[in-house]
Image 1: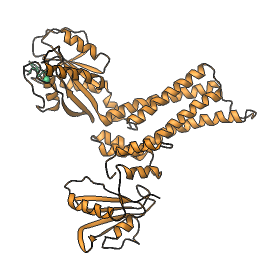
Image 2: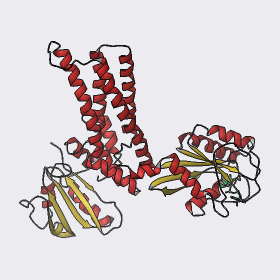
Image 3: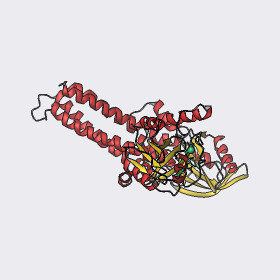
Image 4: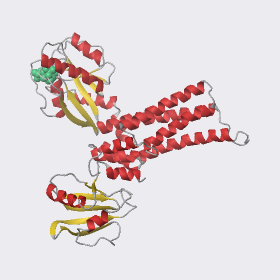
Length: 446
Ligand SMILES: Nc1nc2c(ncn2[C@@H]2O[C@H](COP(=O)(O)OP(=O)(O)OP(=O)(O)O)[C@@H](O)[C@H]2O)c(=O)[nH]1
Ligand SMILES: [Mg+2]
């Protein structure tokens, strides 16, 4: 039997109302001890007005919601006390409940109980966290699909298809003498596996979009000193965030800002101009700029239209050639001296032009218009994406076995492995450490 947990479910700051939530067998009993109305025989899913009192001292005037097992978020008895907001009152009532049989919930423990009690699966649980953290309309919609179970349905459908294949193989192995069963051949499995591979590849591609929706596009602005990187950042943000001067080497540390394009966050980082330098501080800045290239989703390489391509420019172009990148040729208001045989976007930040073209290029590179129109039934976190990658690698093994005419019952082992991986994904089977890890990332009270 679970103990009864309690936490403040709203944020602990000044606000009109705070909610203290309890879940577990003793929820009603604990609140009832201090509430002015008897909650023992009230109907489930009802709200009651009264006071919380400790030894004749009124702590607050509250509304208490009583939700009885099993139709609650955790499937246990849940009581929510709506008290006046602010830190002092909320804490006082929380402490009262803690002194009387409730334990302070761990971060994510309410959602963890919902999962362990079978009310939601793991993807739905992770989506609760995504929903809380979502900053844009698109990420909110995607997270809500997760909470509602649409994403899990997509995985369950694939899992059922695998089960069909496994069942067919098993029948063949166990009852080879039956005349009217379908004889499962490598050919037949091969057709099925090809189809599944296509579907999992689509799931993975969508998941990469999902990650962009959730985390945004990490965009790095790089280039030699003085080409106008900080000016571009400022124009994009429409704010004088970074210092701009005509002194080469003005930006020493990174400067960050965010904008949204078609509902997708663009996390923009302006960096120190890259050049060979003996200045210790500038050198550290340059190294930082270079090291950030690897981890970014998009690199904007800025070149100066008014100067010929230099060795430093070439170095930067070379360091970014395998990345998703946009080359922005700045200062087109000045005489053109740059010669370059690559696809570029041109502009200048004084009269401000070229930035719309830059945004269009970003839309094109990341297919943003399609993301906005899609159903958003996407997986999106690292755990989910790495599981799908593992599935695809097992599928490759299967294809290899099929090519080598390995026996069907050997291939079945790999098919079962995929079925299991998808089970882990939705939390049908799980290990405790993983579950603790996932839920500990939640905020307190959720
Ligand atoms: N003519 C012209 N000048 C520009 C343009 N963009 C920026 N500048 C000027 O170029 C100089 C350098 O601009 P910054 O934005 O500080 O350049 P940066 O690349 O951030 O330079 P560092 O931080 O030193 O690496 C400033 O004097 C800007 O006013 C442009 O499009 N046209
Ligand atoms: Mg700068």
